[in-house]
Image 1 (spheres, rainbow, N blue to C red):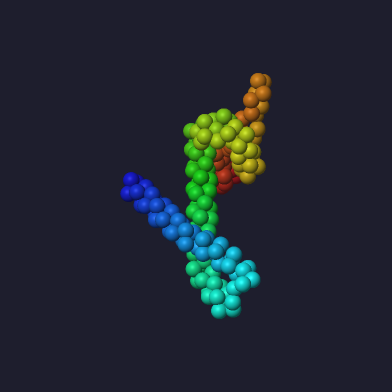
Image 2 (tube, helix red, strand yellow):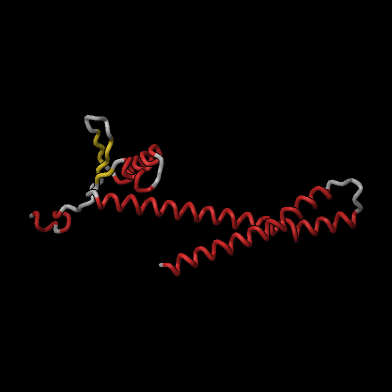
Length: 157
């Protein structure tokens, strides 16, 4: 597990290095070339060379650096969702299908409203039951078991 963690950290560092390198080259070239292209005193040869520089050294590195940032953010969001879903299922197993927003918030670090919204979405997805205590506390019940009759339908007859 430690080897995988080290590999992930190394890959993140490599990605950051490439983002800095690509954007560090691409953004200034793009900005300078764009400003230069709007210079009315620029002759046609210089305009062509500036456009070439923009197309070779400006836009491609900027686009690739931007794509790397977008891709890394998307992957981080997916990993966050996976961790949240794992924590949700673990809590359900530990509590025999019962869960409250405060339990989810404590286990995941989510804000209370966010935990409640997440549970509301899962409740719709899995047809959970709601329970409101006399004190007004909301809890959810997710059916985890399978009826023994569903496992052996021929026994019903």
